Length: 104
Image (cartoon, rainbow, N blue to C red; front, side, top):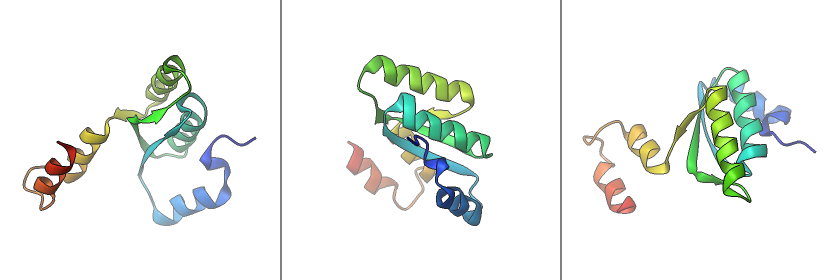
């Protein structure tokens, strides 16, 4: 069984076509599928951001182990709120007030 999204040729081909430099990932089974995808994307040369509060595993121990391994592999561990504000860059962004209303 394939665990990493990167085992699908079309997925990596699209990343290359887009000339992506970074990826934001989340999902189910942090210690298996999400971990393997993050690791493979890092090995493919991308900066990988894993959204911790948007990943899960059947047990909290497995989730913690998966997230810790991704960090050791070089992934940036972030949260949904942190990522959204980072994408906006600062409070001067036209969507800032709208985002603040959504997350509070």
